[in-house]
Image (cartoon, rainbow, N blue to C red; front, side, top):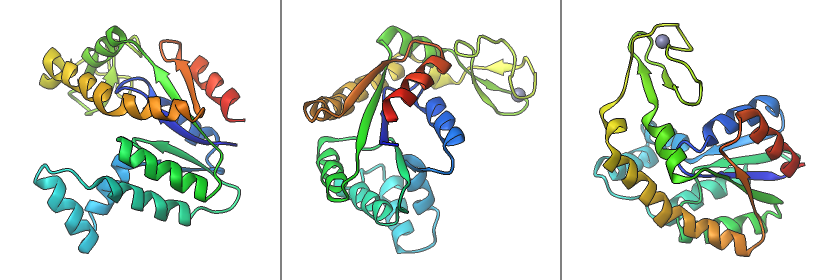
Length: 214
Ligand SMILES: [Zn+2]
């Protein structure tokens, strides 16, 4: 199986597809989820944890090469015969160069899968996010086509303030277009990018991904 980098705008379905992949190929996939890895580092009472915390708490950005170094360690520890699933990385051009360099160094065969959804669909999904008042679950009433909680059945759902805010949504989309799209374009020149129409049903997207990675 090839190494996979999942890319796409927020709510493109990346999280759902990662979960499906990790579930079906749990014995052969190792997951590099940048956000989760940073949170895990941050929670450790040691010098690295303090460093990451201090930067995140002061709203500064970690140096580009920090994540590349963490990814390097991750590659170093990879067991033979396993594949990688990457989410949330590389985010900027400098990170991308570091990423490609490391992947080549370790002779990894990888594909970047972009889940494409148009702006209207992204807005529709973002604005249809609901939180369950009884159990705290996060649902998407548009994706799940439901009006009650899929976890506990409660119909007491509410919308977070920042999900109602179209300006905030446009800012998030703008950030993706400004930062991540150039990364994808660069990777396209390397011939490692495949696009999937993210407006399809979840199962159809999963089938397409499986065809690409084998
Ligand atoms: Zn619930």
